[in-house]
Length: 266
Image 1 (cartoon, one colour):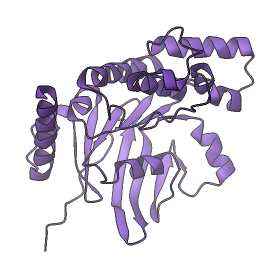
Image 2: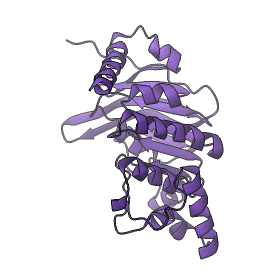
Image 3: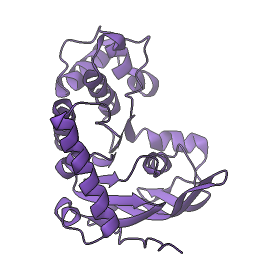
Image 4: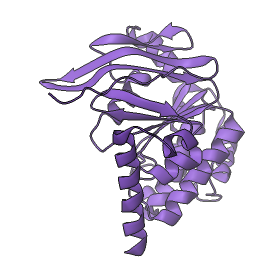
């Protein structure tokens, strides 16, 4: 029988703002999360790595309450959200911002209306104040003056940046990024990495980044957690992960680095 990966020490270095406690999740006969425990410290950037389809996005959706665990719990700021009533959960979600893998912009909305979407739903801002907030967030992501553009007029990297501007419009305490550099060339991927760092500094938010891009992980992470076979098998600083003695982690990070070199060489 194959060895079962052991769970890593997932204790947050500082005060935990997010705690995932022994979370299990199954879809039909497929067991995706197998007793995940993970803590995210206030103000840190935790990057979750792992192969495509390993359950990283499923874990992210549990953290924001879009999915509920079959067993176990998810706690945010000392409140258990995994069993929270929908109305109360909606209030808690306002404290989160999420950047979706494909940006998930509304094609029929302008850039301004995409960024202002949460502001219209959750604030009573005047049109003047809303426009000022939108302009400020677009400035932060390097898209000054593009308010009236439509998503179809934007490149992939620009769409990602609009998605980030929308996620930070309400100045959330927690930012969740689902594969923020997927589908981008190395130069634009690094633009997004720099933007994640800039937003982290300006917003002073706690961030969780899901990715299989090791260059991105090393650049933005405070800590990195490896998800494999439904379990967290190692957690450490970027330096500790780079020098891991875990053969599964080593094989993954070396493989991703090789893929990056192959892409750069064409």
